[in-house]
Amino acid sequence: MTLEPFGARLRHAMDTRGPLCVGIDPHASLLTSWGLNDDITGLERFTRTVVEALADRVAVLKPQSAFFERFGSRGIAVLEKAVEEARAAGALVLMDAKRGDIGSTMAAYAATYLDKDSPLYSDAVTVSPYLGFGSLRPALDAAAVSGSGVFVLALTSNPEGAEVQRATAADGRSLAQVMLDHMAAENAAATPLGSVGAVVGATLGDAGANLAINGPLLAPGIGAQGATPADLPGVFGASAGNVVPSVSRGVLRHGPDASGLREAAGRFADEVRAAVSDG
Image 1: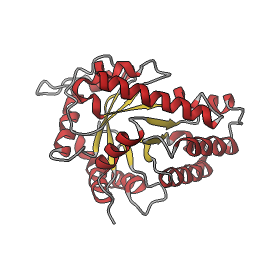
Image 2: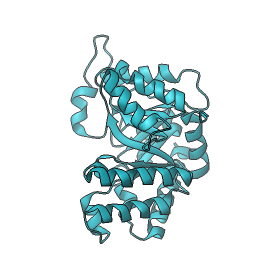
Image 3: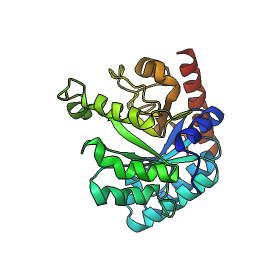
């Protein structure tokens, strides 16, 4: 049975649990700060702690696939279990994999993360459109079938991204705006929110783009990268109500105590809600 569209499920989760995405990013330095070894046992303990502490209360959990892949098949097994348990506890899982390819290879990536029979099936996945937006069609189609979402890189928080994303297309639009306009077309007529989201860094100051895509806006950069919830209205303007701020180290550094993780996540969610409301 196809799930309710991701955009509708995300809107409900944001309204009931607060507009926050917490990353599961098991950096070696974070494992060390938690008193864990940088090995599969430490990875498993870290991941289980985050899921048990937060999956029943935050809107979205976002595991960064790379930090699990570095441990090979054993790391992927930890990731599979985390996805399953987080979803069972009510959190939406956004797999941060940033996949991007063409044809049958993109279709294989889509099957990995967006096919309900896959052990890594997630509620949404991040993808890169800079092989052309049309290269994402296998993922977009797979998401539509399974009721999943796709978050497309648009204006990222890393400074190097500007040389591609701010480049000018033949019609005068930035390449990022071209991608955003494609997303808006995918989300046309969706209610209450489309299932194709954009990744737009909260550190940008001014996005300098039309972000009205009728879809969610994943905003990395809150916390350790320097942005704060108070920055959101300035970056996202009238679209701030559709922003899902992503915090990783800003929450995770409060572990390994579960209550510390919960308090930090709750505080960020409250600050985001207040900033968006005031904005």
